[in-house]
Every structure is written in C-alpha cells, then in structure tokens.
Length: 217
Image (tube, rainbow, N blue to C red; front, side, top):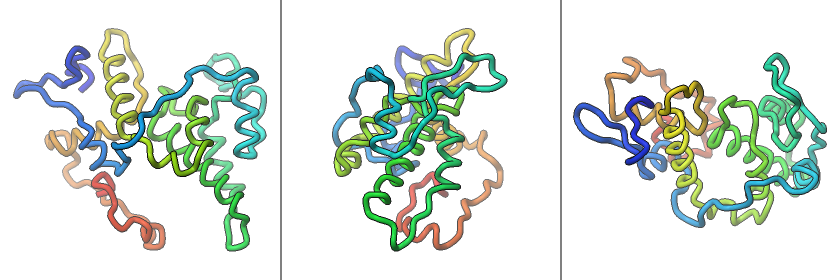
C-alpha cells in the first residue's frame, strides 16, 4: 500500500482509481473523536526534560537515562517513556479497589491514557518509546482531554508516515498503522483473512463497551 501512496494527493493510486483513508474511517474503526479542538502544543522538551512533569503529575520517578540494549543507540532522555516499562508498571504496580483515593485513581487513568495515546495511537517507528510531547496534553485539564479531535491528529499522523515511507530507501513506518490494516481488510477484501478470528474478551471486560467500534469486530 505504501508503494501505491501518492504524497501529492494523499491517496492510494490503484488500477480502479484513487482511494484514501478518511476521518469517517478513523471514527468508525476506532471510536476516537474526530470533532473538537485541534491537537496543538509545543514540540520541544522543557528545560530539565520531561522527567519533572512525569514525577509531579503521574508520580513516576523515571530514571535519568534508559538505553536500548542491543540496538547500538546512545542512551535516550527519560522524557521518552519506554512502552514496555510503562505496561509493566500498570500491570504489576497499579492496584485499584473501592478504597483507592480518587486522586490516585485519576493518576492511574492518566498513566493509562499516556500509554494508549503515545504507544497505540501515535507510536514511533520502534514501537518502544512514547514521545514526551503528549504529556502536557494528557496532564492538563481532565475534561479538556476528551474535547479534542484526537481522530484528526491520528489521521494526519498516518498521512505523514505514509508520505515518508513511500520514499525510496524507507524501511520502517510509525503511526497507527493498525487502522490502515483494518481499512485494507474492509475495502480490499482480497487482502483480508479468509476467516478472521473474532475479538474475544471476558464478559466483565466488555460491559463498558455498549457500542464497540467497528474495528473490534
């Protein structure tokens, strides 16, 4: 699909004509809101890095540096949260019950949102690091988080990464490419699994999904 992508028009050039992923596709497949305020903010880290913000808002004492072993990369700034570390923290250390203080529950919710947004909707090419630029958007006013057009930013990220990976020499791609996979399965059925496995979870884990997005199916 990347080889069929045209950066000039943001469309796939196919023998039958041009097609592209739209905001409607993002909304239907994921349920992520596509209306509201635009996702804007600074793209540079503050003085001292993102560590102080992570500690103050989330209560996570990040290490100063976290190298990627076996990759040959230099140590990266701790403002880039390591996805496996964050997932392990949520699974092993986050315990919520009826006696958990409300401020602590909200802090856990923000940690989950950072993992969801930075590691699932806007992953980098390695799928191991969450960029610190998302932290101010997810540690500010609680109600304002849900009033932003996250779906628009997700689609813009997909377009940008497709434009990048369609160039000669590109070897990796970031962004929420699972949406592209779902889109291809839906619109180009010759690439879809013959017998896709249904999404199965315990009943109590789906009680809150009264109207699950189409991508769940």
